[in-house]
Length: 266
Length: 266
DNA sequence: AGCTTTCCGTTGGATTAACAACCGATAAAT
DNA sequence: ATTTATCGGTTGTTAATCCAACGGAAAGCT
Image 1: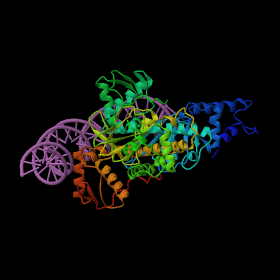
Image 2: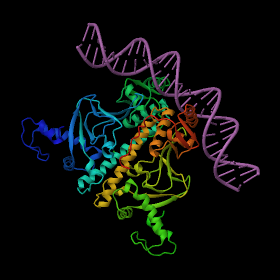
Image 3: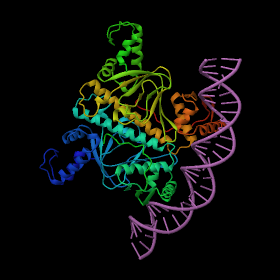
Image 4: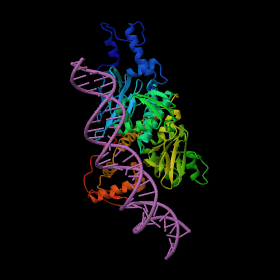
């Protein structure tokens, strides 16, 4: 596996010097790459209140490496003991759990700045999801956070700040799990759809939007059968509640209040 | 509301001195009470790797207070902004969520050393559960953990250690949510029952055990209808899989493997 | 003891979702 | 251009769940 800094280094063909992030007389391609990575990291809750120097300091102070994935590549596999957490730099990631009956349950859809596998890496739990890249060029930065927890004594301010941020990120994961759990309990297909569409409406603040999932994935995400989902969608259309074509939707009436409130941390 | 130390103080009628936890020439009742509290705190993951001195130091360094609840008292109420996390000292606590259809969904059953409301207190999320005392004499120690997170700079080693522990506790909450979510998705009543009973079997390491829930609560906990649960239990009994009387169960056959693995942190 | 409440099993009926299977339209691949 | 794969809608059958309601047994209360 290639180290994070190594990868940047390797991208500069023929350059022999060791890279330093703070010397800005390097070729544009390096600086641009560095910028792209830092852009993703900077907007992550994980690096909140940290300067670029802090971020790079931290990444150097713990074991880290970057891997690039193509569409449908498996990033992490269910039941594995995942020792590193992942931060999505570019691309899109699905986390899904296949149950005993063979149903694929789509747990989350992750974008740059989001993290994956953090519960397992921190808590030493075997993974309960399989993470797959949804686009070519999905880059993941892996971090070993073990040393920040358990019996180790922390003194470096940048590590303490990072630990605070990590705690917030894990809390956010817990909150999302709470909401997903509530949405999935004894809710009808209709209710799940209304919740989902209402959530998209609030996210985009527009009555017309397109969703990032096809029918099968949406069914997996809402934990229902695809044909049942299709039926329900058409029934709602026939009742004059919505219009849709492919993944483009339009809400014609006010959807019942969604349980999902704003996240004060993002 | 009564401060934690104040309460200990108040319990010694007529004594005028300020209490110190480390001077052991106090009346037995104080020392016993102190012991009881520390016993609960000591075995909590939240105070792992901390001496009694550390624990009391930390409790003094953040805002804390203790409240006592009677059976069926509400400890925290759904949708409230809960600024303090709770640690259960004595008694038993249920956390439940009542959905739009009026169904009560029992999310967790908590005992001394467990925490409640930690996601909301840390993440500033409105509560998604109502916590109720299940026994008289349920004592909860409330802690304001705000100051350990976000923009504050931490330096005290005891606070950093506590933050590490808090992170593990939140991770554990997330893990439990993950498992509960998986168990609740598209699983039949039979499967949920098998999972639950199998879990009790592994916990007690005995084929006979009694469960801490009555039928209604168990149905709420498994997110199914009570009559459906009752039907399924009797069907399993008729098929010779189990025997039961009230809350006492006996497994007559090996239950299918439970998804729930050991928690390496407890 | 007598009353009330809670708990648990049982039933029947209405509703709903899952499953398998098929088809047409569209997009992707060769 | 032709084939192939993917995607979305539709149908009918089967199975599971929910709901409301009832009744007996046990436990708690006065």
